[in-house]
Length: 323
Ligand SMILES: NC(=O)c1ccc[n+]([C@@H]2O[C@H](COP(=O)([O-])OP(=O)(O)OC[C@H]3O[C@@H](n4cnc5c(N)ncnc54)[C@H](O)[C@@H]3O)[C@@H](O)[C@H]2O)c1
Image 1: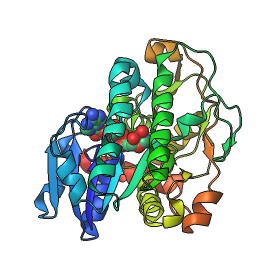
Image 2: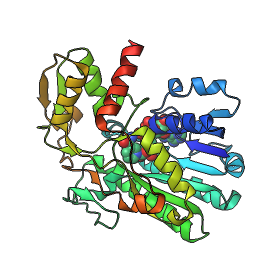
Image 3: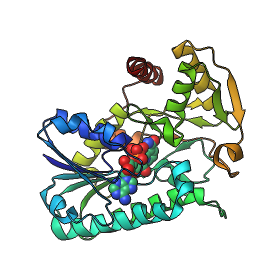
Image 4: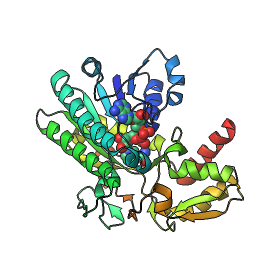
């Protein structure tokens, strides 16, 4: 199978690329390295089934040609992470909306048979105060000038671009609402919580918790995530559907910090800082983000395999080998 991965030098995209190369597929990655890195794909370049272009999907002149070549496209390219979003909100609007619209327009012109996986996000549930989210839940945004929300809004726009093209001309697109994902190639550079905690614990530095740590999250191992995305985009019943993808085990950020400390065997202490100190602005964080996964299971039979402790141990072991 020929597979195009936009944003394929990023965290999830590079794991998808490695997985499909291992399956014997041909993979083409396009990435502008705005947050991704050559380090994430350097080993894949040894494979003759791997091709790569450093380019911006807004202007890449080979997008038509590679789209025509593809049997499947994972559209992962986006500006992601609160720090990156606040640093350049205009780039968020351009990449996440204009880039997605360009891609779908080209697909509809060049290759209406291609399978497409659009990466959306649990952030689209916005301020909905529920603790667990099902796809039919209300999407709630309140009056807020905080540019933090432009990520969620642009991803919601992406969903509607995909839905419009899924109806006419009937493209084979599955829309995945990804919940928090962790695994190799996720850097602490962009403020991701698990790599930051592991790094701090391994150095016996204070583990930095934003807010009081009572906010909860559900973390999915990227190995589970890519299996689920692969199954979803291969399942015709999922075309034109919006589907939660993640792991429904929930943990508070404070308990996560203690779990990381315990698995590392660290002497670190806990340090609490405000969102204003962390991001330079105050904003309301989302209290819970736990997916209800019944739709994913019904469509694909998939349930996550890796526990949080197993994933943490795996990442800690990788980090120890590196240092
Ligand atoms: N990681 C998570 O927990 C999570 C949760 C929800 C949704 N998602 C979604 O999954 C996708 C992948 O996320 P990730 O965590 O791997 O993020 P990431 O930042 O590691 O990957 C995104 C990649 O897109 C690339 N990119 C950005 N703008 C581009 C452009 N204009 N042209 C070409 N490449 C561009 C970046 O360089 C980066 O490599 C994103 O669409 C994100 O919204 C991720």
